[in-house]
Image 1 (tube, rainbow, N blue to C red):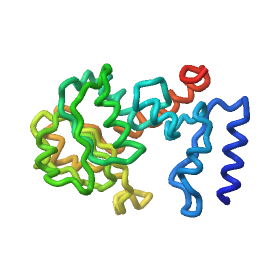
Image 2: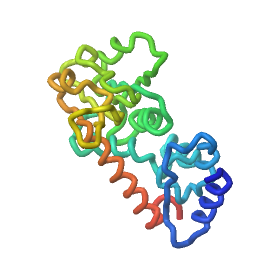
Image 3: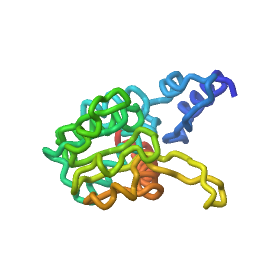
Length: 222
């Protein structure tokens, strides 16, 4: 498919009154501009929450479609009654899909937020020391087993967003999913920790469907 063909399909869905919301599955082939496609989606149908209008509205606390993985993380925190107010949260990763939006959500003046947030990335110095200060760590950098036991303090909450396929001779498919957290080392120190698979992944799907429901009910845009 060419970029123009995909843009034409997005335009068709934008103008189809029977369609409440849709997503364009990422990543896209290299010959198609991801930014151009995302910006072409009608913000009112952008249930992925990636359009700059939705990102901007989310950033300043207006009703919006919040991208699914950050929204799922906040819902997990809410459901397990994890205290965030005044807590130090370290987000490892600064992607527009997870790291950046979840850091904004956690720092907002709102329920299940009011945290002091530090965003770390590949250029962060003293990452281990920063992580050891964290009450909550959200690992979202796409490097299997990156967060190790000596980087986490006793009683910390660890949320693993990583889903990297690695080769495995123990599965029929020949691969398995690995998270960004070295689970065997980190889990004994945690008050709460999400597994991979089965942790954040299902919450992402649920949040995507929640956004679709909101779109159909016109809860964000009238």
